[in-house]
Length: 236
Image (cartoon, rainbow, N blue to C red):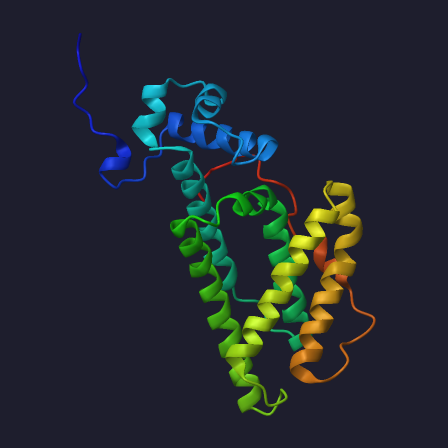
């Protein structure tokens, strides 16, 4: 019998990008989505991916590591989201655009967000999520500090207000996608959801009423709210 001397990919700290690796991630996302993280076994993952146990363990130590790889790739997209620059426009339009893109990202990866509930007791998972939140908080905090310094906002604590506003959007988005589970429902109710969080955000910072009427539907029409066709693919 010939024994392979190749070390597991997970042992050398590299991130593989092979057809079998992608097949496992694609299958895992679907199985996690339909069965839930806690109820899924490695055996079910490797069968769904059409690979042997040896191949699975060549790439992943366990199902937790599969979830971590999925999360890691999605958090890269979140980093791109909170560093995104919007075209010059009025303050309220920028708030609306930021919320639209957040809801669009949540929509495309809502299955991953729901999976987090079964994995938040893991220190690495918590660290990944906190890293994303830290980036959002810093950007929002800096923005609030500039508004306060320029007299465009009420005198508030930028750090505390950033936590409050981000927490509001996260909580409301989670509630929204729990209540509306089909693409038709999401498209129907999204304009109202974006309006609610955007108006609340604007009032909190500017102590003023947002502009009305406002073309929420027109701006949302350009957002990609679909789940990605290639699950687990690296971000562009």
